[in-house]
Amino acid sequence: MPTDILPDDFEQLFPFIKKPIDNTKEAKIGATRYLNKDRAARLTTQATSVVVSINPDDIPILLQVLFLVSKRLKV
Image 1 (tube, rainbow, N blue to C red):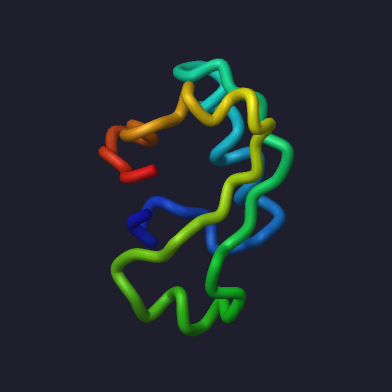
Image 2 (image 1 turned 90 degrees about the vertical axis):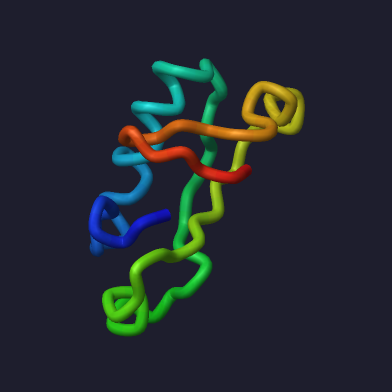
């Protein structure tokens, strides 16, 4: 995901991602986290990976592509 649209604070990541996915895909998210836990390193890159934990039954809902904050994201 593009780092310029993501909150740099870990605690803000969950609500930032949860609401749009709830609205567009109706998949319930259990947790989110940055794959790279080093905040300073994330801020020096243009994109970073985010791990989103969901109910296994909802996996088909999210495959293959997800649009989040007007960005096309690979799932």
